[in-house]
Each structure stands twice: as structure tokens, then as C-alpha cells.
Length: 510
Ligand SMILES: Nc1ncnc2c1ncn2[C@@H]1O[C@H](COP(=O)(O)OP(=O)(O)OP(=O)(O)O)[C@@H](O)[C@H]1O
Image (cartoon, rainbow, N blue to C red):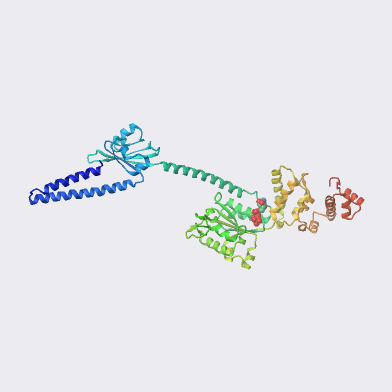
């Protein structure tokens, strides 16, 4: 019989006794005493029942399993959660000692009740339910009576298979995090690999000096120059010289991302900000760059609407995601670059003047390659070495060929020079890149012969000789025979043979 029923039986017996006594002849004071005692007992019983029911309700709704024994280790109570966690029912344990159950070895192992009784203190251990193989964290505590003897042992049983699963999940996530961090490091290195910056010109000297000075500060830099002049190279150098090296460096090409997308790319959005927005939202590039550097390339192509928003970011040093209302603090170094003339764009009302002044704190202007010809020789040699190494070659460049490179206008600037040298090294067969190899590729309008001839290193006779030779070689190559070439050049066949001899042209080779 449960405790609850035992006590109910006592109270029912008292009821019977009371009813019998009430029929007897009693003095007034005896009657009052018995009535008082009787109602005291009833109140105490009502209190007990209420508390007992509350305790049962609370303990049955606990997350952890409760296992209570008396001071001798005899099981007197388990809550519902204990059965749920271990699969062990009341019928299997109530009234039996923990010692006996443990020795039997069918229900659980790792019980601490007996140890709590022995040591008279709390004991923690790992246990296991043998009914469903669940691992448990078992924590036992003694409850003492007034004389200091243990009257109850309360054991808390926590299912740690969930914890174990969480532990595994955390370990998996940690592995993924380590992998992702390594990948970020690798991609960062690839994206901003250290360039071998080659320069000789005054313009580049000044730019590189400035980079060394302002690199370690957080000042905003605006780099301008035609396409291919090395704006990104300069931005990389600023990053390497800054105190933000090894922190994020996010490069955004404002012209390459459609205007309507650029805002969400930069600012990110909260979940559900757009109808098709991913449920959990998206972190923006500004946030990704936090603590690091952001390069806004082709800033001259940014829409006026976004320019105002960028201006606000620069003023407040915080952003709010699209669809959100929580400002996020930013600690970012901003580098902007453009091949547009921003002053002109301001006049055309395509660029905000106030934003221009915010960006133009330190301006770095890169001249086009045609205005810093001193760099061409060094850049060419750098790329010759680079591509010879890459393609396993030992290609050299004819002196006249270098001359042509120095005279060309290079509309695509250093990028064009770099690509040309790579192409020349790849297709070259005899180890020497010649003057006319380059002429046949470059846009000849960009190298006027007048310019070439006016160069003090070339006298008229040599230049004419060179021109004649190139024309004949090209014509023979194009026509496929000396006969046809002679016709095209307006010469007789013998005259062409003669010229070839004088100009040292090997017809069989050409
Ligand atoms: N001083 C330099 N030394 C060596 N290589 C350089 C130098 N300047 C530029 N380059 C190379 O030239 C190419 C173009 O440079 P970069 O991309 O920095 O130009 P950009 O001005 O940013 O071009 P765009 O405006 O088209 O983005 C790159 O391959 C870069 O490595």
C-alpha cells in the first residue's frame, strides 16, 4: 500500500473513533477538547494531502529522473521521468533495496545510494540503465533527520545520451569550423597574394611611399587610375602594411554587381526582408569585413541611392541590415578605387560631392603606363622571368622589341603588357622575341612610325632598313611565296631576291 493510502486509512480510523466517542456522555470541556483535536487532525491531513499531491505533480514533471530510498537503501519512490528515461517501472523497484537490485544486475548499474549512506555525503557517478542501455549522470544526496541519521537518499538521474549527442554535434561543428577557417585563410591568401610590385617611375615611387606612410593608419584611401594601372595592387599593399593584416579583406566590384543586388550584398538582410529572402537572412559584406578592410572597387559606378547609404555608414560607423532595425557597429578600414574621373562625375551629377570628400581623405593617383614609361623595362623583365619560369623557357627579348614596348600607348596598361609577354613567351619557338613579333600583335595605330623615328636612338637609315625588312618578311609570310610577295610589294622577283640578300632575310626560313 502506498504512503498516501496508509495515512488515509489512519484518518478513516480516527473518523470511526470520533464517531463512537461523540455518542458517549462527556463533560463540556472534554467535548471541546475532542472536537478541537479532531478538526486539527483533519486540517493536518488536508494539508498533507495537498502538499503530497503538489510534490507528486512537481516530481513527475521534472526533466530528470528521481529515485528516493530510505536510510537503509530501500526504494520508496521513483518519479515518472525516471521510468521514461530508464524504462524501469515502480513495480520493479519499490520496496526493494538498491543493494539487492544491484547484485541481481538486471536493472541498473552505477547506483550510488549505498555509497551515499556509507559516506554520509553527496556522491556523483556515471550509471547506466540495463533495460534500455541509456547512460546516466547519477547524483545522490543524503537527507538527515534531527539526530543526524540518514532518513532519505535522493538520487537525481540525468539522461546523458542527449548530452553525448550534443557533444558529438559540437565536435562535428568544431571540425567544420576548423576546416572553414583554413579554407578562408587559403582563399584569402589566393585572393590577396603578395604581389611583386615593380616600379621605377616617380609616380609609382610617390604612391608606394604614401602607402608605407598611411598603411598602418586607418585612414580612408581613394585610388584612381585607368583600368589595369595597378589600383588593386596598391590596395593589397595598403592591406599588407596595415594593422589589419590577417583580418578580413573584402573586395567588392561595385560595377560587377547589379545595382539592385549591391545593397543587399553590402548591408545583408534580415530573414523575410524580401519575399524570396532566405528564412534566416544573410550577413552583408560590411559585416563580413568587420575588424578588417573593405575595398569598394569601381566606386564611380555606384548608384546615387546607394551612395547616400554609404555616406551614412561612413558618418555613423554602423549599418542596419535590410528589413532590420538593430544597428550593427562597424570597425572597418575603407579603400575605394575607380577608373572614372570623380570630379567629372560630380559635375554630371552622377556622384555625390559630400561622399567624394569623405572618400578622398588620402588620394593616390596612378598614371597610365604611357606616362610612366620608365616602368615598362622593369615590368617586362619581371614578366619575362615569371612566364619563362612558368612555362619552362628561356625566352629573351630583342633590344628593338623593348623599344617598341616602350613606345606603345598601352590602353590596357600593365594588365595588357603582362598578357602580351605571357602570350609572347608561350608562342615563341626560337628563344628570342623579335621586334616584328610584337608589331604583328600590337595595335599599330598606337605606335606611330613617326614617334619611332623621332626617337633619338634611331637614325633614319636604320629605321627605313628595319621597316623594309619587316614589310618583306610579313609579305612573304602572308603570300606564301616570293613570287606573290614581289607582286604585292610592287617589285620584280630578282629585285626582291636582291633586297632579301642585302637585308639579311633568309627566304627559306621565312
Ligand atoms: N607595379 C606593378 N608591378 C607588378 N605587377 C603589376 C603592377 N601593377 C599592376 N600589376 C599587375 O597588372 C594587373 C592589373 O593590375 P590591377 O588589377 O591592380 O589593376 P586595376 O587598376 O585595379 O585594374 P581595374 O581597374 O581594371 O580593376 C595585375 O595582374 C597586377 O598584378
